[in-house]
Amino acid sequence: MTEPTAKAWTGDNLSDAEFTAIAEILRDRRQFDLGQYKDRCIRRRIAKRLRLCKVTDFASYLQRLEIDRDELDTLLASISIHVSQFFRNPDTFRILEQKILPDLCRQARAAGRTELILWSAGCATGEEPYSLALLVDDLSVTDLNIRVLATDISEPVLEIARSGHFDASRMKEVPPEVLEKYFRLENSHYQLIERVRDKVEFMRHNIMTASDYPAVDLVLCRNVLIYFTRAEQERILSRFAMALPERGVLVLGRSETMADNIRGYYHPEFPVERVYRRTAEPVTASVI
Image (cartoon, rainbow, N blue to C red; front, side, top):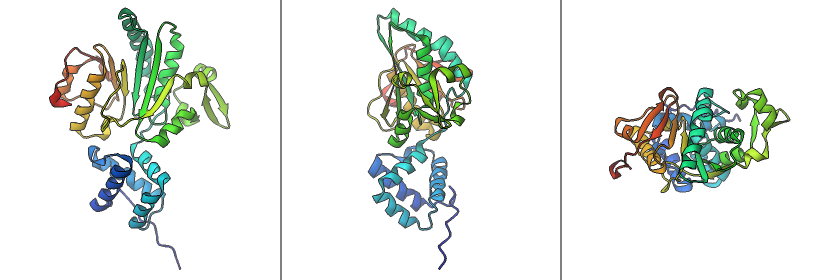
């Protein structure tokens, strides 16, 4: 007897009922609301997971999600993860290194502060926050405690990030001298040294549903907002504005733009690289 052929799942042939069934499981079991995300993108990612699992019977797959915690977490990671690599868009990190981080340090000293907090929101497998940590280490600042906070919705993805263990494909933009100084080659993978790993605190956080955003000096949220509806993008950007002090910094992805009713909270300092400064404009309750 031949086995049934796996369906050629695509975002287009995933029915509304099937999409809703998965959405309900993720909401009930992982407090992840698919309703806040762009529908077409999420459908494609679900379909890709179904193809990888060679699903022939959707009802059986739903039953598997109910009892198989690992598969549920893998599906969530497949939906939420975004592509990342060290120093992605090098010009952005060059600006952070040469302009933004030194200026934030000056601001902190002038205010009599002893700490800076940098937040990578939607950190995926850790390349972005570790890139920040490498810049911080290279600054060799001794009078300030500079912390890197890295958050993502997927705990399995965060576990990968905490390991600091990376495939060579993620290292394309890492200068050779940085690679030699901060990484150890182990079985064709690169292990980030412990001193830099210790600068980053990873924690689970959903920027869409979390009741609190941490008070920080810099937010990197690159290529994350593209998965949200326009209304939800505005809500997230408003909440970032609440988390940042005046002249705090927000960095978005190059393909991401800011709605007109949010622009008052941010001044574009390096527009091409989507680097913004927080203005003094108070956030109104109507946009939160």
